Amino acid sequence: MSQWVAACRAEEIDAEDVKRFDHAGRTFAIYRSPDDAYYATDGLCTHEQVHLADGFVMDGIIECPMHNGRFDYRTGEAKGAPACVNLRTYPVKLESGTVFIDLD
Amino acid sequence: MIDRAKRDYSLVGRDGQLALEKGLAGAAWYRSPVSRKRLKELMQRRDGPAIRDTLLWFAALGVTGGLACYLWGSWWAVPFFAAYGVLYGSASDSRWHECGHGTAFRTRWMNDAVYQIACFMVLREPTIWRWSHTRHHTDTLIVGRDPEIAAPRPPNIPGLILNLFAIRSGLAFFGKLLLHTTGRLAADEATYVPEAERGKVYVVARIWVLAYAAVIASCLYWSTLLPVMLVGLPSFYGGWLLLVFGLTQHAGLAEDVLDHRLNCRTVYMNPLFRFLYWNMNYHVEHHMFPMVPYHALPALHAEMKADTAPAYPSVLAAYREIIPALLRQAKDPTSFVRRDLPATAASAGAVVAAE
Image (cartoon, rainbow over all chains, first blue to last red):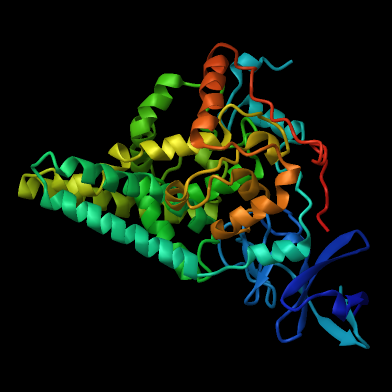
């Protein structure tokens, strides 16, 4: 069953950037691609639990700020050491300028 | 009570366990307050600077190595081998490092290709050192956790001198390489190389042993040392600058602190040194923000220097501190160099969210 939660306003995230969203004791990373599509993943790197929202976004990749572990934020796929475990992704929708993610 | 004089630097010993218990492992580190907007600008990846610097590096290797070969048998070859050796055995350190972080080039395969080549030159197995360096960044100078502490206390001064020509480190490397060809890791390596990555270690070790065997075979076939002077030995006779530069990074500074301003040095270098070292002399900045490429580190330094202790004006100035500090530590392992932060700096140990 869907559990849509408002994460942020769309304009709060620059194109090709990421924003942290904390909810109910969990942390997420919300991404905006260069073509204004929005994506969401778990907020912590699967390697050493570092907040990905402090990382670098480029070409569909989020790079962890601690060890440069890389993930495809659209699919969650880990793209090489030290990131070896995929990120969980979440469905995202945009309504009236607000980014919602489905936490179910 | 910890006996500081007998700290255990192994990754499977008492101090590693203590670091875990004290919350020093995988801890949150201080970050200087650089705005997200500025950091994003500094993190931008480019191919241009690293392609230029890599072509220059390969060209310099080709010219010095070519002239050394041409003059082989004459004393005139010596300066060219000396230069070739430094380019091979020392400049490869920074190429290994920056490409290992994946920040030197924007294009991924370029990072990976130069990483593999530089690893071979600097006697660092690519998978082992990728993971070792990951740990070094997680737990910089945390005793029992960081596998890359170059000058443990008390420092092994004769060992450091031998390492000017990679004698201890080189012999250790070949011992580990042969171990890896048998499909095994050393106990410390097993603490930071994940199971899934170990197969790559063994395959690369076997390839490298075959490569060294081919070099030795060519020496025997042609009855000359020239091949091994070009591939293999330069890691030793040309490795001295790696140590000279490398010790400036952390030697003599505080252990077990969660603030890179206290356990790293930033040292100003001339343009030639910065080319050879790919700006690794901006070491506080690199550790605090490892996503920033080498070519942007001077700009990052300008951004955050008010929050750090003053940079050392030269390599010589750094060694005026390092050599006495190491000699003191040889007698008193509890001593270390305290970095005084400027009045403008945020307090040490606090973790500030950069907004």
